[in-house]
Length: 498
Image 1 (cartoon, rainbow, N blue to C red):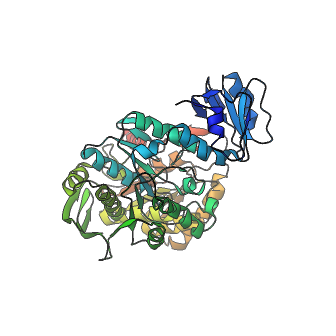
Image 2: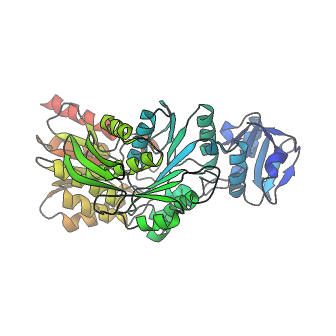
Image 3: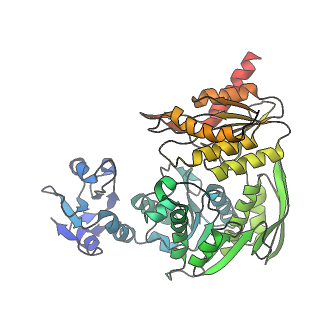
């Protein structure tokens, strides 16, 4: 990729070129540590730091130019673009710099509170089974076929996103399957991307620290469907929507394109699940749709996964993947890391690790655990710090009502006192606990070890909240912490004592 400062500045109303307009840009970065020769360093003002403060560092590392606001000082010897709003300017500059890679691939976006990750992995499996090369952008990782890259946000910022999309196009991807968060939609991180198929999974309480109201949260999700309906370079746009969720009708109203709906309870849906049989080792059900009937016997379980399957099937059908290939891919599909993941360390009880960190997510996981449990359900869970506080007592109520034993603990406390977070969780626990066993252990490792210690044969231990994450964010540092590793260590310690 190569463009001059003047070419990029011409894309932004009110932009002023400082220094050499013919300066050639070969790379765009928002992290000064990544700047090098040919880099345009984006000086983005943030909540905690201002990108302008890092101009000297970017220059020292060889940056060719900066894009900054109108009042910033551009050092001598460095070219620059002064703009009224850096974030807005990047929405025009970044897609153009990378020659609009999303226009050259089919792009499937998945939004919703829960189910995005599992649904995206299923869609990826179906498309690959159909012979396509697929890139995936999600919560756990970015994947270019089988090559995995680390991620820091569900949807990367616009600079990183387009860099990734460009790389995917260069490496021959036919499809990009991406989770699209409400933050990314509200902040327009996906500006310039033309989606071909958009999926809505569900809407339950989450991120109200950012969106403030459920209405705002819902309308942020709906922006994906607004984008879908805008005429562009590609044809064949389809909205795939869960109509068992009340917000589904809003998503359909915002999607000015073809619709495909899915449901477990509505006969009028395009895809409907029938004869659902959820078991400990998997589930069976039939999908009825315009193509006929698809009988499935799967390795994953839980009613929430029935919805994820329907969503993925809808997206694959919208992209003209044949039902036979869809069925073959689903038959081979196993769980996604940290999503109802079974940890087998040779113990005589079941350990399940799940990312559930919302009231609805926790309820889904515990309802499934109850359905398959032969004896007790022991739940270890917490709530994150510096996030929506109103969901804490709600999750406490859900955990205590659906579990036989509740152990409340820390999640990612961040800047908050873990004990204060637990105080708010405990209010909900107390409302529905009754005479059931309950322990409060703020140290997450000790909490998991305690759950394993008290587990008896055929019990189910559910460790909820962190799933695939291998870290814990504390007040003053981030430490390595993996629920799955900790659970295995707890089982090993238990065996060592017996």
